[in-house]
Length: 133
Image (tube, rainbow, N blue to C red; front, side, top):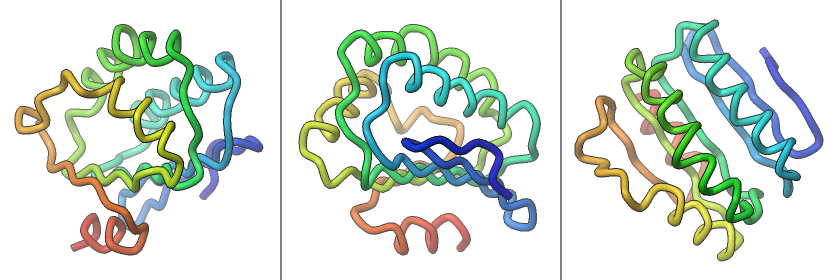
């Protein structure tokens, strides 16, 4: 079921798998990026989500001010709401600048301390298979 859709992002919830799938489709302005990121928090509050698939293959660079907002504001909200998660998979962007901006946002997070399994993938199918295994 599609729960949020814009030209630059699609967020779907699959109840049977308790899976939230986020697909970035293009560049998003600052306001659009932040609105979409807050939809993640709303979904965590509204749905029983155990698996999280973030598909960044088509994502583009995130502005420095939005990277800072993600680190300083959004990540605290996310970690408060994400305790029910069991697995999170991220499919990396094909755009090198987008990869760098994502790494800048999350380089200070010790992934071994996350309360859920986290893996990064180059390919969508591998990420989805890992989540559902």
